[in-house]
Structures are given as structure tokens and as C-alpha cells.
Length: 326
Ligand code: PBG
Image (tube, rainbow, N blue to C red):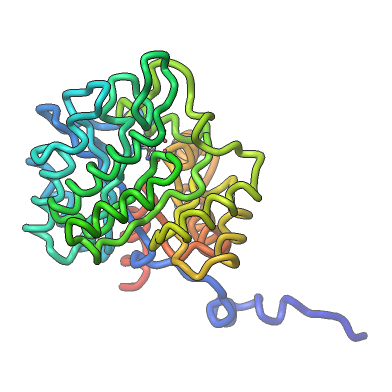
């Protein structure tokens, strides 16, 4: 009888280790950090294990991140002041600017990526500037976003990551950075960002839920893949240096296709709702947390992601480190 015996390469741990095609490591991760201007750090209820950190508390967690050999963080600001112009998003003494300066001084080897968006800083919670009638002003917004990116670069950001989904923002940011001499500051573009229900816990954490309407006028329809490829091609032509696909799990096909279509590094954002689901189900005893998390992150990498932004980064790095010392 001649038939394929797949079990041959599966029946022992050592052979399975030999033929394993995808391996995740702490080096693959970017850890998201919420930095708050409030007086005290606080836990994020819907995201067990995650918190909003004050500047005072930031060095402690940054030290742990560095110790775990996670190479990068992405910063999100929670400002006290919001207005319709997103003034605190580009202030020299804004929360992200201060956090960036602090991290780069104390932990120069840690790569600091800053999320460039207006939604955490606008009183209405939308990612761009609005007209009186509530309509989005795309072209004015991209100038404002470029100002925000420049203020991050001046504060010392290693990479800026626009997540607003305005048209033309990669071009506008590149031009502004170059003119100010930041020719070597890369842009990690949220190129294919879907209008997703999975951002729910993040919006609670960052207080960035739109006060009216929704984001379907600028974020993408989950039904569309060709459109994602158009968005990615546009950002490549505007000279993005990294491409983000977000969220990750419902969009593994987009990650896979993006990897084939461009030679830029592909970043998958394993978003808040994806994290919360694992925490809720494992907290209730329905899923094995470690196995579920490892399977999810391995699958995102197998689909084609070179880098994964994930709230699981610290716990996974701890698990991997303890396995290596066995
Ligand atoms: C916008 C931004 C969002 C996330 C990252 N950047 C929220 C949104 O678009 O509503 C979501 C990340 C997550 O859910 O983990 N600044």
C-alpha cells in the first residue's frame, strides 16, 4: 500500500520541532502602551492585564518590556484636554511627546513608534477635522496629521504610524518630515484599516468613541479585499515604509495577499477586541489561554505578518523565556 503518511513527521516532539514552519519570538512584537495625563494609572476593565500609564509609572513597565526583549512599543495618548482642532495632539508638551522623550532618554534601545491620529484629541472623537455640518475635511486633516507626526519626530519618535485613514496622509507626512530634516524617520502606515467592531475596548480605554456617527466614511468595509490592495498600493506609492493590516484575525487573507503584493514589511495589528475575547473566554474557563494565544499569534505570522502589534506581547515573551530556560 502506498499512501501518504503525514504522521511520520508528526509523531514525536523532536520531529515536530524539526519541521515546524513558523515560530514566534518576542522579537516579532510591538507592545501598545496607553499613556495618560490623568493623575493616576488605572486598569482597563475590558482588557485584563492592560492599563493606562502615567508618565511617572512609565519607566517601570518600559524596563520590563526591555528585559523581555520586546523591541518596540507603540504609544497612544490619553490627554486631559480635547477640542475640535486636536490641539493637544501636536503640542510640544503633549502626552505622547513627553512620553517619547522620556522613553528615548531612559531606554534608547527601545524603538518608540507613535500612533498618529486625531481621534483621542478631538472633542467629537473623529480621526480628522470636521466642517460645521459634521462632514470630514480630508485635506485640512492631513496637514494637521503631518504637524502631529512632525511633533512626534521632534520628540524623538523612531517611527510614526498614521492610523486615521485620511486620503493622502502618507504623502503629506513624508513631505513635512523631509522638509524638517527627518528624512530617516520611517512611516508605518495603517494602510488597510477596517471599520471594525473589534476596536470597542480600545475606544473605551482611550476615550475615543465618536460622539456622533461612525467611521465607515473613512475606514474600510470588512467585506472588501480588492479595496485593501488599492489602499496598500497607494501607501506604497506615497512612500510608506511599513504596511499595517488591522484588525488581524478576520483579515488573515488580506495579510497574506499584502505579503505577496509588496516587499515592504507587513505588520498585523492584533487589536483590543481580539485580546479581550481571549481574556474573557479563558477567564471563564472556556479556553486554555496560553494555547489559544500562541495559536492566534502563530497563525498571524504564518499568514505573512513580519511584525505583530499585540497586547499579548509581554505575557507571551514571559512564556517563551520560561520555555527557553527549561
Ligand atoms: C486610532 C486607533 C484605533 C486603534 C488604533 N489606533 C481606534 C479606532 O480606529 O477606533 C484601535 C486599536 C485596538 O483596537 O486595539 N487612533
